[in-house]
Image (cartoon, rainbow, N blue to C red):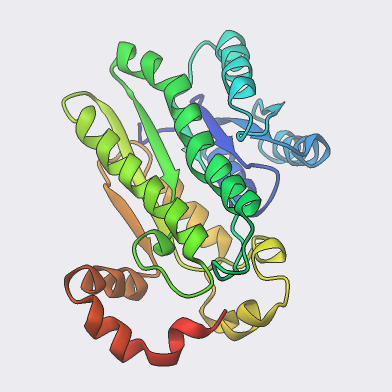
Length: 263
């Protein structure tokens, strides 16, 4: 699937941030983006920009992935409209940086509904058809937080740990097919994610020089389509750090010192 021309690529959370950049990137390569998100106005703006700039068909559908009944309804409508989905990029997600004692259960529940259950529901909606055709690609946007949790992100990290658990399990379940599964584990990206996650602005300010360019992340995500890439870890040094953490967590926690407390 190295040639994306004419392919139908479904992107959740596509009205802004990384999802928007991924939408532009697939359109630039000749694919037909299918954009879903809650904000219809912003979705339409992205769609019009894509159609005008790249001359491809760009469909939009309003969907809150946390509403599981709506997921099935909207996905059925998409499959009826476009016949097949070649690639699903589960990008929708959000985080709130709070300590457990401060976080409400409603906030934690919302993160799991969007980040985990919505992602699983979207996957289940498109996977049977992919398996029947014996082709397709599921790309789940997880996080480095799913590998290495830090203070004030325990709820968010737990949701991303769940995304990685689901992604790895799914990959093994369908390993004998031609449907591919990839996890993307970025560190902090310079997007509007932090307007919700870090309302004080302190974390974004302290990490400004380390933040990833969303255009670069989007390009790497799209370049993985059709490959057998198991994971994309960005930046590479952070990916190495999280790998070492799996082997010697005590060492990483000791050496990192105050770096974990930037939130």
